[in-house]
Image (cartoon, rainbow, N blue to C red; front, side, top):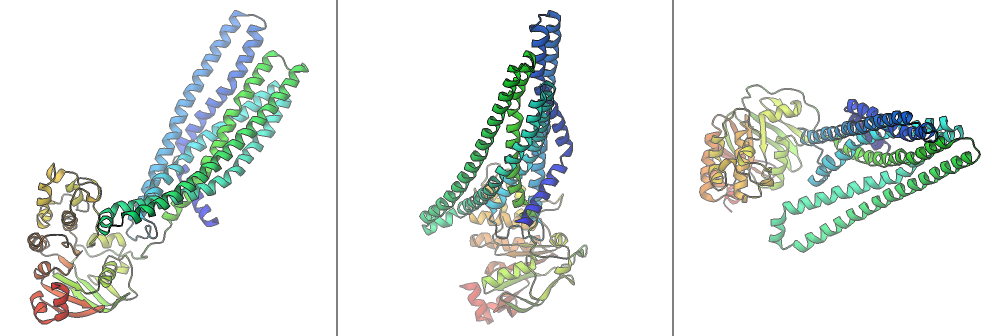
Length: 564
């Protein structure tokens, strides 16, 4: 908890330091507003003493003009101070969202480990907003402190006992507010954890709604989400109760404090220690003080929420990567030779394989788990326990992750699309100035575009929701082809595509990747027939390699893998 708190404080410090200009400007303008608010009852007291008790039209006009000027200044101070504070809050939240997004998309990965997508979205949105709001809270908090001090000073001028009472009582109230906010911080953190979990469950259920319907598991899914939502609701209620208790106690303490000030002031009036104007000023200041003091209580609650959210953001930003190290750059232009030397990891055992530059290779892996492991090693989502993977003679562990991905792309089977146009999805990873049409033609995406209003510029919805499974696969494949990497590894790109389209895509991939190294991890006969050679991996090691037709004729394991 101590390390998390320290990391969270670091996130808050950076969020404030990055917006210090607006925070300082907002605090100064807010302080001017509070000073103006405190001066109003004093000026009214002066008007009473100098223009009402002893009627004087000229003095009345003069002090009313002064009062109008103070009102104008405090109004503009609040307007522009609040604008600066809000700008600091929004810009800090925006930068935090970008920081979280960069960490999630970092080449070395790891931020998503143990966190469903909905939880990461919650961290990047609600938690970032709460930490950004700390800037606004600090702006208003500084202004409130200045208001309390100004009120105390003005009270001292009217009456030393009243001023001392405020100077002693206000810090005590602030300390109590901080103490009362501690339970709220813990419950706010629990609330955000439950909300993130509920968001993650909801996102998973929406993404798998078709599968759930196919399995007739709607009732179980609804029951699961209901339980998760109920837990989130209960955590929210507990946090709301803590906030209500903290606010209620602070209001009670504040009211009691103001009543004490009024009582002491009334006794001073009765004793003749202060006059009518001073009495009006004292009463006005006593009524003014609850405002900044209640703001301080609100600031305490906002800081508690911000600390809880900052700890969650720090946890994501500090998440260990799936891989570490590597700073070398690949050869430019990369020849594209891929070599596996005695690769051993999970089910893979001493796997040796060389993919020559420009080769179009088919890779059939009989165990799906071994295929997933191999893809993770090639994408460097994990490093092998034994052996190595080399790109143009350089081990992947020595290459900088970002540089590796600029030369080698692993397009996995479950690649996701995003909300946007079809063309935006295809060109998402393409180098600037690349013509996307050859890739779209190779993946038969022109047929997909023909079904959309607006063609290639038509929107496909979140995760390609307006497309069928086969259409989504084609768009994902076109995106991988348009990226134009020196080495492309594609996993089962046509499992939901009809036979005629699959044959067209097989020829299209070969045409689009002429001169580029391409590895097709698949059991599709149409795709394998278009390769230069096929390597069969069985039992975690290479069992055979030959052209597709020869393996179908001579190798029963291969024949079973691709024809059944």
